[in-house]
Length: 161
Image (cartoon, rainbow, N blue to C red; front, side, top):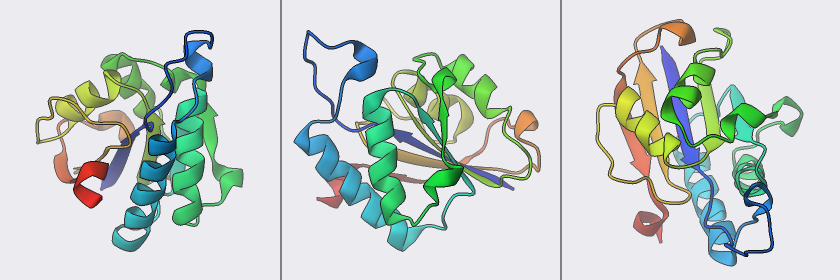
């Protein structure tokens, strides 16, 4: 069994004088990341591996959540490939994960994240909100073989406030 935890970065600033890649979280995004991290700590087994987009807002979200789940940041992997808005690019990259990893947590961006959750999971989402989490299980031992899985949980900050 493989488990994929998809997390959209927190609510970020839309300052016009900052490159998209460098946008940081707003206070709400920071607060929501703490909220989600605390809930994951109490509800789910820690991931074997965390991957994050190199974008500042995704990295900030991942760092905050990682503090709650007691994940060793030395094992944390920044991946430029996750700075994508295309679901097929995201899924192709997920399929490269080592089979030694059973639970993979990814911090990335929309629309690729929502589309990937809809392609890979069993529940449809119009839009995964900022700091939203979708967890999908696959009945396989190989990441390269993942197909349609079972959406086993989803968490949205507005439902936890």
